[in-house]
Image 1 (cartoon, rainbow, N blue to C red):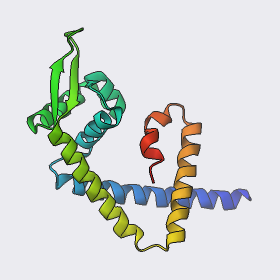
Image 2: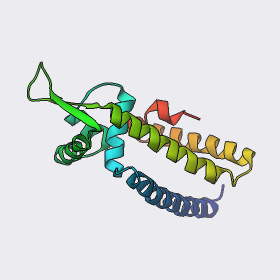
Image 3: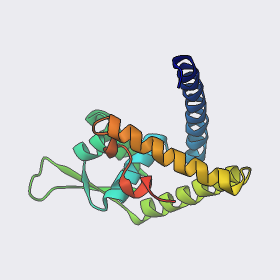
Length: 164
């Protein structure tokens, strides 16, 4: 491929990815607000669900790329909403363990159904073959990204990355 053609493709891909990311982020935040959640709160709940166990505040901060002070505020708000519960670690009283409540699980299920509905509505405007190709190409891009950037595999848990 010629250098100029590659440069044009890179520029086009960058513009399109930024536009898609912006539109999806904005729409996702709007969707979450209908459930009384912010994007960071959603990712904390999702992290606990995907890990399937109690999480320390530090682990949640790492999982969601937040600082510990920010995580404390997020978890405090989620606890007030009764979506998570907190308790001191019996083995190390300095550690706080955070667990998803049944209300938290239910809200995540509702959010997932809402996201799936919106995605189905969008994909309905594409021919089935194009939707399959989009899925294939997104997987290829994600794999290339994860290979290139060390630690990126932690950003998208495998269970979600391969879900169809």
